Amino acid sequence: MPEETITLRVDRYRPEQEDEPTAQTYEVPYNEDWVVLDALNHIKDQMDGSLSYRWSCRMGVCGSCGMMINGEAKLTCATFLRDYFPGEITVAPLDNFPVVRDLIIDMDDFMEKLVAVKPWIIRDEEKPIAEGEYLQSPEELADYKQFSQCINCMLCYAACPVYGPETDFIGPAALALAHRYNLDSRDEGNEERKEAVASEAGIWNCTFVGECSEVCPKHVDPAAAIQRTKVATTGDWFKSFLIPGRKK
Ligand code: FES
Image (cartoon, rainbow, N blue to C red; front, top):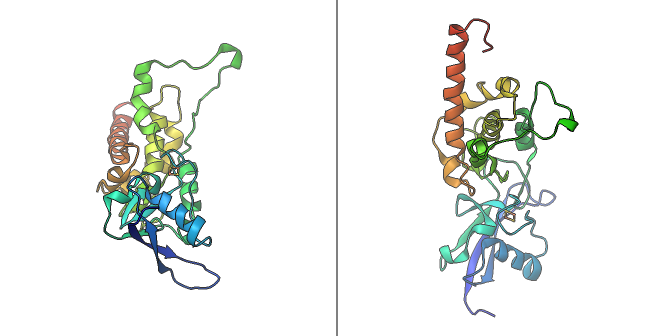
Protein backbone atom coordinates (compact mmCIF):
# COMPACT_ATOMS: atom_id res chain seq x y z
CA MET A 1 0.00 0.00 0.00
CA PRO A 2 1.61 3.27 -1.01
CA GLU A 3 2.12 5.72 1.84
CA GLU A 4 1.68 8.88 -0.17
CA THR A 5 -1.72 10.16 -1.11
CA ILE A 6 -3.08 12.61 -3.64
CA THR A 7 -6.16 14.79 -3.23
CA LEU A 8 -9.00 14.49 -5.72
CA ARG A 9 -11.66 17.19 -5.52
CA VAL A 10 -14.60 15.67 -7.35
CA ASP A 11 -17.82 17.34 -8.48
CA ARG A 12 -20.90 15.68 -7.01
CA TYR A 13 -24.44 16.26 -8.19
CA ARG A 14 -27.27 14.13 -6.86
CA PRO A 15 -30.42 15.75 -8.22
CA GLU A 16 -32.65 14.09 -5.63
CA GLN A 17 -30.80 15.79 -2.77
CA GLU A 18 -29.13 18.97 -4.09
CA ASP A 19 -29.99 21.75 -6.53
CA GLU A 20 -26.41 22.61 -7.50
CA PRO A 21 -23.23 20.58 -7.89
CA THR A 22 -20.98 20.45 -4.84
CA ALA A 23 -17.36 19.36 -4.50
CA GLN A 24 -16.25 16.38 -2.45
CA THR A 25 -12.64 15.72 -1.52
CA TYR A 26 -11.04 12.28 -1.41
CA GLU A 27 -7.51 11.34 -0.32
CA VAL A 28 -6.49 8.56 -2.67
CA PRO A 29 -3.32 6.42 -2.51
CA TYR A 30 -0.72 7.87 -4.86
CA ASN A 31 0.64 5.42 -7.38
CA GLU A 32 2.67 6.94 -10.19
CA ASP A 33 1.34 4.38 -12.66
CA TRP A 34 -2.27 5.22 -11.93
CA VAL A 35 -4.40 7.32 -14.21
CA VAL A 36 -7.26 9.48 -12.92
CA LEU A 37 -9.72 6.73 -13.83
CA ASP A 38 -7.84 4.33 -11.51
CA ALA A 39 -8.23 6.85 -8.70
CA LEU A 40 -11.97 7.19 -9.41
CA ASN A 41 -12.31 3.41 -9.44
CA HIS A 42 -10.48 3.26 -6.11
CA ILE A 43 -12.93 5.79 -4.66
CA LYS A 44 -15.87 3.86 -6.07
CA ASP A 45 -14.62 0.45 -4.87
CA GLN A 46 -13.07 1.38 -1.52
CA MET A 47 -14.38 4.71 -0.30
CA ASP A 48 -17.68 5.83 -1.74
CA GLY A 49 -19.79 3.54 -3.91
CA SER A 50 -22.26 6.33 -4.63
CA LEU A 51 -19.90 8.17 -7.02
CA SER A 52 -21.20 7.96 -10.60
CA TYR A 53 -19.17 8.27 -13.82
CA ARG A 54 -18.83 6.54 -17.18
CA TRP A 55 -15.99 4.40 -18.44
CA SER A 56 -15.53 1.16 -20.29
CA CYS A 57 -12.30 0.24 -22.08
CA ARG A 58 -9.57 1.91 -19.97
CA MET A 59 -7.44 2.12 -23.12
CA GLY A 60 -8.48 5.28 -24.94
CA VAL A 61 -10.82 3.56 -27.35
CA CYS A 62 -14.42 3.71 -26.15
CA GLY A 63 -14.48 7.48 -25.59
CA SER A 64 -16.70 7.29 -22.53
CA CYS A 65 -14.39 8.52 -19.74
CA GLY A 66 -13.99 12.17 -20.77
CA MET A 67 -14.06 14.70 -17.92
CA MET A 68 -12.63 18.09 -17.00
CA ILE A 69 -9.34 17.52 -15.18
CA ASN A 70 -8.09 20.71 -13.55
CA GLY A 71 -10.24 22.58 -16.05
CA GLU A 72 -9.03 20.77 -19.18
CA ALA A 73 -11.06 18.28 -21.19
CA LYS A 74 -9.27 14.92 -21.01
CA LEU A 75 -9.77 11.17 -21.14
CA THR A 76 -9.38 10.08 -17.51
CA CYS A 77 -7.95 6.74 -18.63
CA ALA A 78 -5.08 8.56 -20.35
CA THR A 79 -4.35 11.18 -17.69
CA PHE A 80 -1.71 10.18 -15.13
CA LEU A 81 -1.76 11.20 -11.49
CA ARG A 82 2.00 11.77 -11.71
CA ASP A 83 1.46 14.74 -14.01
CA TYR A 84 -0.26 16.56 -11.11
CA PHE A 85 1.33 15.09 -7.97
CA PRO A 86 1.84 16.46 -5.35
CA GLY A 87 -0.79 18.99 -6.38
CA GLU A 88 -4.52 18.50 -6.09
CA ILE A 89 -6.61 17.20 -8.99
CA THR A 90 -10.07 18.53 -9.68
CA VAL A 91 -12.46 16.28 -11.57
CA ALA A 92 -15.65 17.68 -13.07
CA PRO A 93 -18.10 16.61 -15.78
CA LEU A 94 -17.40 17.75 -19.34
CA ASP A 95 -18.15 21.44 -19.86
CA ASN A 96 -21.00 22.54 -22.14
CA PHE A 97 -23.28 19.58 -21.42
CA PRO A 98 -26.14 19.18 -18.93
CA VAL A 99 -25.14 17.03 -15.96
CA VAL A 100 -27.28 14.01 -15.23
CA ARG A 101 -25.48 12.90 -12.06
CA ASP A 102 -22.02 13.48 -10.56
CA LEU A 103 -19.62 13.16 -13.52
CA ILE A 104 -22.17 11.88 -16.02
CA ILE A 105 -23.32 14.23 -18.77
CA ASP A 106 -26.37 14.08 -21.00
CA MET A 107 -25.17 13.07 -24.50
CA ASP A 108 -28.49 13.43 -26.32
CA ASP A 109 -27.63 16.69 -28.07
CA PHE A 110 -24.33 15.27 -29.33
CA MET A 111 -26.06 12.16 -30.66
CA GLU A 112 -28.58 14.34 -32.54
CA LYS A 113 -25.76 16.40 -34.07
CA LEU A 114 -24.03 13.24 -35.23
CA VAL A 115 -27.15 11.93 -36.95
CA ALA A 116 -27.76 15.34 -38.59
CA VAL A 117 -24.60 15.02 -40.73
CA LYS A 118 -25.47 11.49 -41.90
CA PRO A 119 -22.17 9.83 -40.96
CA TRP A 120 -22.51 6.78 -43.12
CA ILE A 121 -21.79 5.86 -46.73
CA ILE A 122 -24.48 7.29 -49.02
CA ARG A 123 -24.78 6.02 -52.60
CA ASP A 124 -26.96 7.35 -55.40
CA GLU A 125 -27.47 3.74 -56.36
CA GLU A 126 -26.33 0.64 -54.52
CA LYS A 127 -24.83 -2.01 -56.76
CA PRO A 128 -26.03 -5.58 -56.28
CA ILE A 129 -24.21 -7.44 -53.51
CA ALA A 130 -23.26 -10.10 -56.06
CA GLU A 131 -21.00 -7.52 -57.76
CA GLY A 132 -18.80 -7.41 -54.67
CA GLU A 133 -17.46 -4.71 -52.42
CA TYR A 134 -16.57 -1.13 -53.37
CA LEU A 135 -12.81 -1.29 -53.72
CA GLN A 136 -10.57 1.48 -52.47
CA SER A 137 -6.87 2.12 -52.96
CA PRO A 138 -4.49 2.82 -50.05
CA GLU A 139 -4.25 6.41 -51.32
CA GLU A 140 -8.03 6.80 -51.23
CA LEU A 141 -8.07 5.43 -47.67
CA ALA A 142 -5.31 7.84 -46.68
CA ASP A 143 -7.46 10.76 -47.84
CA TYR A 144 -9.89 10.38 -44.94
CA LYS A 145 -8.22 8.02 -42.45
CA GLN A 146 -7.18 10.74 -40.00
CA PHE A 147 -10.76 11.97 -39.76
CA SER A 148 -12.07 8.45 -39.15
CA GLN A 149 -10.17 8.08 -35.88
CA CYS A 150 -12.78 9.93 -33.80
CA ILE A 151 -13.93 7.98 -30.72
CA ASN A 152 -16.89 10.29 -29.96
CA CYS A 153 -15.41 11.27 -26.61
CA MET A 154 -16.87 14.81 -26.85
CA LEU A 155 -13.74 16.47 -25.46
CA CYS A 156 -13.83 18.79 -28.48
CA TYR A 157 -17.35 19.91 -27.57
CA ALA A 158 -16.29 20.58 -23.98
CA ALA A 159 -13.36 22.69 -25.23
CA CYS A 160 -15.23 24.54 -28.01
CA PRO A 161 -15.92 28.21 -27.16
CA VAL A 162 -18.76 28.31 -29.70
CA TYR A 163 -20.72 25.19 -28.69
CA GLY A 164 -21.19 26.36 -25.09
CA PRO A 165 -23.14 29.56 -25.82
CA GLU A 166 -24.54 28.41 -29.18
CA THR A 167 -25.94 24.96 -28.69
CA ASP A 168 -27.32 24.90 -32.25
CA PHE A 169 -23.72 24.59 -33.48
CA ILE A 170 -23.28 21.12 -34.93
CA GLY A 171 -19.82 21.08 -33.47
CA PRO A 172 -16.33 19.77 -34.18
CA ALA A 173 -16.65 15.97 -34.07
CA ALA A 174 -19.81 15.79 -36.17
CA LEU A 175 -18.39 18.19 -38.79
CA ALA A 176 -15.12 16.24 -38.90
CA LEU A 177 -17.09 13.07 -39.42
CA ALA A 178 -19.08 14.65 -42.24
CA HIS A 179 -15.74 15.62 -43.84
CA ARG A 180 -14.52 12.05 -43.37
CA TYR A 181 -17.47 10.68 -45.38
CA ASN A 182 -17.32 13.42 -48.01
CA LEU A 183 -13.69 12.45 -48.65
CA ASP A 184 -14.47 8.75 -48.93
CA SER A 185 -14.19 7.58 -52.55
CA ARG A 186 -17.16 5.20 -52.01
CA ASP A 187 -19.48 7.97 -50.86
CA GLU A 188 -21.83 10.16 -52.90
CA GLY A 189 -23.56 11.97 -50.02
CA ASN A 190 -21.90 15.38 -50.12
CA GLU A 191 -25.06 17.12 -51.37
CA GLU A 192 -27.26 15.40 -48.78
CA ARG A 193 -24.98 16.50 -45.95
CA LYS A 194 -24.72 20.09 -47.15
CA GLU A 195 -27.98 21.23 -45.60
CA ALA A 196 -26.60 20.54 -42.13
CA VAL A 197 -22.89 21.05 -42.79
CA ALA A 198 -22.82 24.18 -44.98
CA SER A 199 -25.21 26.10 -42.77
CA GLU A 200 -25.03 28.80 -40.12
CA ALA A 201 -25.20 26.13 -37.43
CA GLY A 202 -22.58 24.13 -39.31
CA ILE A 203 -19.14 25.15 -40.59
CA TRP A 204 -19.89 28.88 -40.69
CA ASN A 205 -20.36 29.02 -36.94
CA CYS A 206 -16.80 27.86 -36.31
CA THR A 207 -14.47 30.72 -35.39
CA PHE A 208 -11.35 28.57 -35.86
CA VAL A 209 -10.05 28.95 -32.32
CA GLY A 210 -8.68 25.42 -32.66
CA GLU A 211 -9.26 24.24 -29.08
CA CYS A 212 -11.04 21.18 -30.47
CA SER A 213 -7.87 19.98 -32.17
CA GLU A 214 -5.77 20.77 -29.09
CA VAL A 215 -7.77 18.45 -26.83
CA CYS A 216 -8.47 15.67 -29.34
CA PRO A 217 -6.83 12.49 -27.96
CA LYS A 218 -6.78 10.88 -31.41
CA HIS A 219 -5.30 13.82 -33.37
CA VAL A 220 -8.32 13.97 -35.64
CA ASP A 221 -7.87 17.73 -36.05
CA PRO A 222 -11.52 18.76 -36.38
CA ALA A 223 -10.50 22.40 -36.84
CA ALA A 224 -8.66 21.49 -40.04
CA ALA A 225 -11.61 19.40 -41.23
CA ILE A 226 -13.95 22.37 -40.75
CA GLN A 227 -11.64 24.82 -42.52
CA ARG A 228 -11.17 22.40 -45.42
CA THR A 229 -14.93 22.01 -45.67
CA LYS A 230 -15.31 25.80 -45.75
CA VAL A 231 -12.85 26.01 -48.64
CA ALA A 232 -14.54 23.17 -50.54
CA THR A 233 -18.01 24.63 -49.98
CA THR A 234 -16.93 28.06 -51.15
CA GLY A 235 -15.31 26.52 -54.24
CA ASP A 236 -18.50 24.60 -55.02
CA TRP A 237 -20.52 27.78 -54.66
CA PHE A 238 -18.34 29.64 -57.19
CA LYS A 239 -18.34 26.70 -59.59
CA SER A 240 -22.14 26.62 -59.47
CA PHE A 241 -22.10 30.05 -61.15
CA LEU A 242 -19.38 29.20 -63.65
CA ILE A 243 -20.83 25.84 -64.68
CA PRO A 244 -24.56 26.17 -65.48
CA GLY A 245 -26.67 23.33 -64.14
CA ARG A 246 -24.13 22.35 -61.51
CA LYS A 247 -25.65 21.78 -58.07
CA LYS A 248 -24.76 24.37 -55.42
FE1 FES B 1 -12.56 4.07 -22.81
FE2 FES B 1 -11.25 5.96 -21.42
S1 FES B 1 -12.37 4.27 -20.65
S2 FES B 1 -11.60 5.88 -23.57
